[in-house]
Image (cartoon, rainbow, N blue to C red; front, side, top):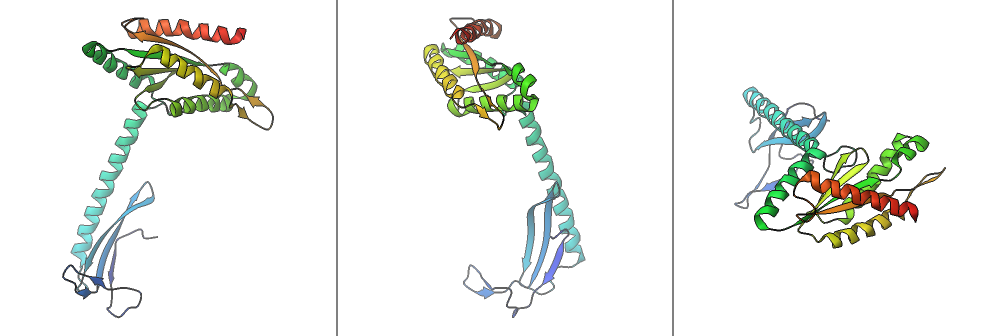
Length: 247
C-alpha cells in the first residue's frame, strides 16, 4: 500500500507500461510520475497523479509542493465529511434512521406556514410501537431496538418520499403528510399496520410481534398548533390501541 509520495521514472521500452495517444494522434510514453495518496480515516480515499513525458521531470521542490497540496486536500475532505456527518446527526435518529424530533419540529413549522399561505391542509399522525416494554423485559433491549428498527423501516418503505416520519421519543413516532386527505391517510396507515403485523421477527426461541397503534389529526380542522393536533392524534391513537385489544 502506498503511504507516501512516490516519484517514478519510466523507460520507454518497459513492457509493463503502455504508450498513450495525445489529442494530436501521437503515441508517447509517460516517463515520469509523481503520485500522492489521499487517506481519510486511515483508508485510501483518492490519488493525485502528475505525469510527464520527460525523464526525471520532478525534483525535491515538486515533491514538497505535492506534499503541501495533498495534505491540504486531505484536511479539506476530512472537514467536509465531518460536516456532512454532523449535519446528518442533527437531522436523523441514529437507531431508527428516521428524522429526529428537532428536525420534525422544524418541518412542522414550515408546513404550517405553507398551509396558511396556500389555504391547504395536512395530516399529522402519531404512532406507538405496541408492547415494547414487554419485549424489552422478556427478550432484552437489543431485541426491543430491532422491533423499533423494523417498524420504522416498514413505515419508510411504504410512505411517499415527500412525507416526513420522525422518532418523537422512546417508542413513539410521528408523521407529516402534506396536502393529503385524512381518511386516505388513515386507510393507508391501517394497511401498513396490518402488513407489519403479518411480518413478526422470528428467532430460534420465539416469534416477536412488530405492531403499532396510530392516530391522526388534520390541519386546520382538528387544530391550528402542533400541541392541539398532537392531542387529537394522541386520543385517536389510544382509541386505535383499545380497539385492537378488544379484537
